[in-house]
Length: 132
Image (cartoon, rainbow, N blue to C red; front, side):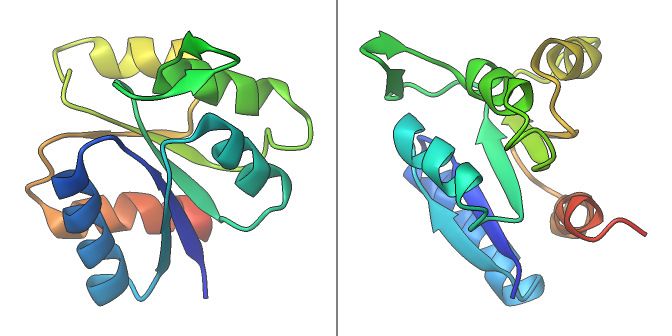
């Protein structure tokens, strides 16, 4: 079974995403906001894709606040984790944000919140796990 790691600070989003992924997608789900844990999961290859919230209110790395863009940059800069697909999830969905965030982070995809179209959400994630 394929596993999605949800890096998200909003418990309601975690619940909604988890339900869509498990019930509709038949996927396993892990959740953490802990940056060390994200890096460990990436290195041990125990997730097939990461859903990365851009604005992480509670996440810190080496004592400093860190956001999803910075975590994604770290993952993409490391040859051991660079191939792991990362999809940014953000409520800051203004025109031009998608391109800028993707370029800045090196992420593989982008989903705007709130997620209204569950099928499109699921399709985006599945396309990164199992590219056709």
